[in-house]
Structures are given as structure tokens and as C-alpha cells.
Image 1 (cartoon, rainbow, N blue to C red):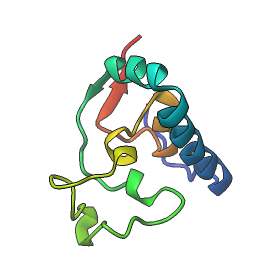
Image 2 (cartoon, rainbow, N blue to C red):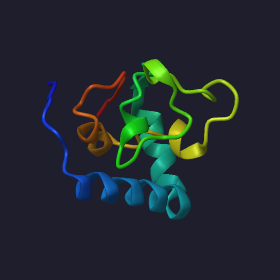
Image 3 (cartoon, rainbow, N blue to C red):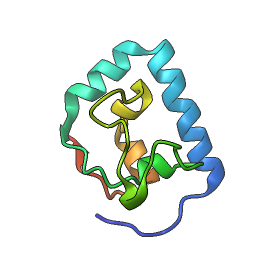
Amino acid sequence: MRQNKKVPFLTVLTGKLRRMWLCTFRPGYVRAQLARRRGACLQCGRCCRLAFRCPMLARGNKCLIYTVARPRNCTMFPLDARDLAEVGNQCGYRFVP
């Protein structure tokens, strides 16, 4: 199901902090969720504009360092289905039960 409504800033900021906490303190949860993740990054730039625009995001929403040195928080997005809601469920990834 696709949604186009804007996600509140506080929700997006909370999501960023939640992902940082999970990657740091709950690596088992992260591994389990990534094992359920299917699909591929569409390189659409939606996750690169959550809360603030990433400085590595160039024109056309293309990442300047996508194939070279993407930070871990970028390669891990989305960690679970909750993260998909932050990008309006418009992502190349999905999670299987």
C-alpha cells in the first residue's frame, strides 16, 4: 500500500534515533530483520531526506558515495517495516513474515 502523506518531523527524528540505538545496542535484532528484508535500493533519495538532506545527495537524488563508502546507517535502511512508513511505503525493500 502506498501513502503520500507527509510524516511529522518528530516521528522522523525519533526513527533516526531508534535506528542508531538498534544498530549500536541490538545487533541481533538488526541481523534478524535484515534476514527478513527483500528487494533492493531504488536510489530514490527518500531516505536521504529524512529529517535533513544528506550532504552527499546530488542532483536527481543520486548519492555521490553510493558505491564507494556509504555509511552504515544508509546501508541498513530500512531496518524493519516501521522504517518504510517514514518514506511513505515507497521503497524497493519489503519485509517477509
